[in-house]
Length: 165
Image (cartoon, rainbow, N blue to C red; front, side, top):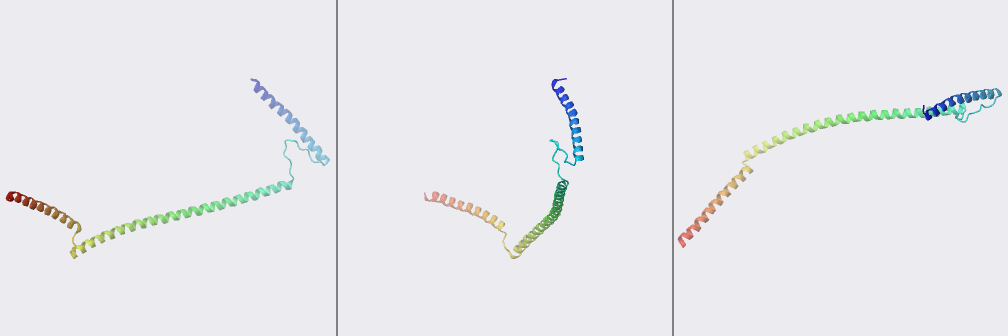
C-alpha cells in the first residue's frame, strides 16, 4: 500500500473510534442535564436547536409558500390552456379565411373572364375595331406606302437624269 492510502485508512479508523467516544459522551451529558433540569449541551458541529414554536412557525411559512407556489402553477396552467385554445381558434379562423380568399380569387377570375367575353361581344356588336388588328394593318400599310414612295422618288430621279441631261 502507498503512504497516502495508509494515512487515509488511519484517519477513517480514528474518526470512527473518536466519533463513537464523543457521541457516547454527548448522550451521557444530555441525560445528566435532563435529570438535573438543565438545558442539554450542544456540540459545536450540531446546528442550534430551535424551539418547537419556532419550528412550527417555519413549517407554517413553508406550507404557505408551498400553497402560494401551487396556486401560481395552477394559474400558469390555466393561462397555458387558455392560450392553447385561443391559438387553435385563431388557426381555425385563419384556415377559414384562406379558404374564403381562395374562393374569392376563383370567383374574381371567373368574373374577369366573363367581363372580357362581354367586352369582346360588345365591341363586335358595336363595330369597335380591334386595336391590335388595326395597329398591325396600319404598320403594314405604312411599310407599303414607304416602298411606293421610294419607288416614285427613284422613278423621278431616273427620269430627271434620263430626260434632262
